[in-house]
Length: 112
Length: 109
Image (cartoon, rainbow over all chains, first blue to last red; front, side, top):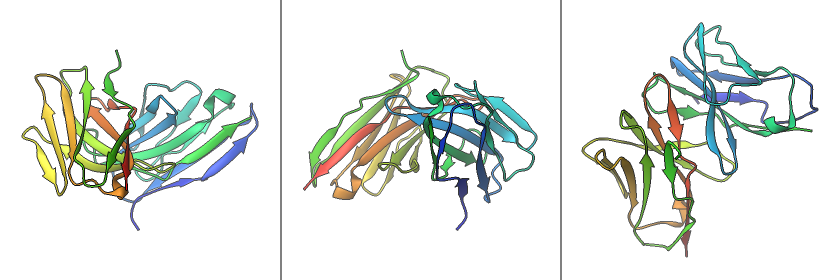
């Protein structure tokens, strides 16, 4: 089934460790996004990419980095995890910025 | 003031009822508007885009009021399966896509 695949589904990570959340889409969408969703705060944009080779900062980029080497993949890296990064992370894609977004199933990340 | 605001609810309604949610936005230059549905511990899924003239999809009707800067979602003949959180999203250009925090709907038997 076409769509967005995120991995892992969930993870418990020790503070200070690094982690890469994976996101792959097979819809040939130009734009991809990473959000975190926290209770009471809703979805907040971490980073985005409007096309392969380019990335941009969202609302809450600190502590996160991304890369977009090709159209399909958009990994999110936490270089040194902190407990405040405990959240549910969603990857999304859209044909381009003004179009509806399609979301992956999410990654539940707990930093202890 | 938040850029996109929604009443968190919950809205508790009986089956068969009509319920409406509003979502206000602060950026008058906003270009595109959407409603998403999110079930507990699941990803948001697009319910419908909101067009300037208003649009309908089965029991769901979406409207845009640019003068007052809000969008609305009307659900007719509510079903138990409509119970979910409804998120509005507003696109304001340069990949600035802002989601509301959602309105919870519970449809009661």
